[in-house]
Image 1 (cartoon, rainbow, N blue to C red):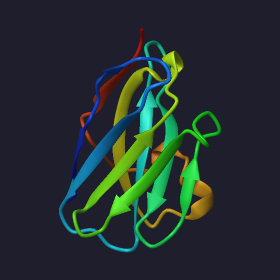
Image 2: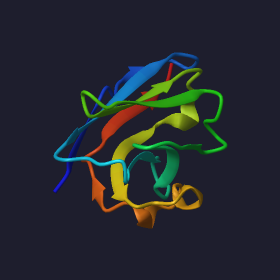
Image 3: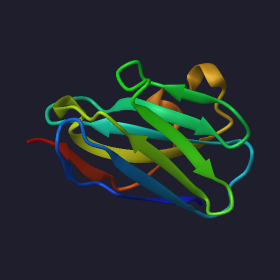
Image 4: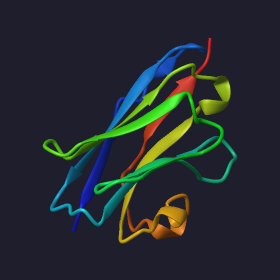
Length: 125
């Protein structure tokens, strides 16, 4: 059973940058996909970005070009580099993982079985 823990959330000014990390504990495989979702105040949880342990990336349109997802296989971590942050990026950011997810389904919340507790990101002056 995999376990996930997010870190790196903070208060940052508009236009600033932040890097979130997701540490994956347990045995991963090339069949694994790790994603970031976020839930803003009064909003539904939404997809942000995902990466497959074998190959394949996906981004939400709202973050493409500003956010970059990457992985470190040796450390079993997935990072989310967030640049040019906007107030609307304010949310609790969750890391999630699933197995056997095809590329066209990487954005779907129901594909992910295991979730971390989340980390708060606040973008405000």
